[in-house]
Image (cartoon, rainbow, N blue to C red; front, side, top):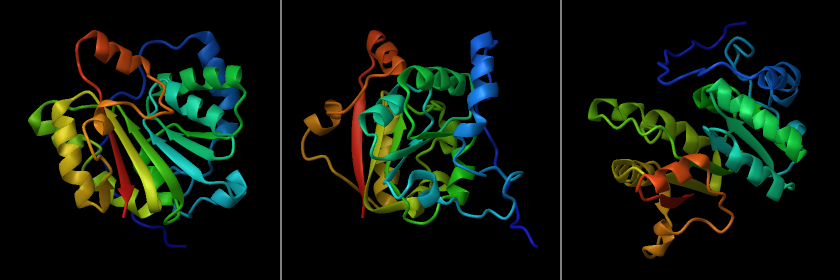
Length: 233
């Protein structure tokens, strides 16, 4: 069988930080494999066969969180919405270990984890399969020469719009004004409508929002969060 050609993808950022606690090593060893959404990586799935989300979540709506950090928000959404299936993608293994610990305490069963690059996940998600997506406090890459590394670029937005259902919601939270600028330039240009009708729509968090540790740090340091809501046309 002829496999698709693997694209060259640079990865920027950390895969692993400081030494993991023994308990976190245990979470990764004991829990992670069972929480996989299926074969996502090129090594596991060189044919790039689409995931069977029907088998995975039993026909429920599926949500996607890109870069879940320490997992506070994604575990909150999973616990508050047991009638949906949620896939969280995070390449930083320390964050994955933190989420696994939170999952043990919360007892949620509708969350699956891809500990890697979301671009690989986009390869294997079926067209129009995701009902809601979250991008919360992504790496800001503040230097101008690094702006092409941001998520809100064609490399990420084109496959995102492909996997979202028509009318699907895409939420972006950031405390970086220039990230807001680039988001408002790029996201509508890739097939989304910005749903804001007044200042409160980007100044106030969503009604089901859970403030993350990163957001609390931003507030302590005087940075202003922005909450941007888009809908796929």
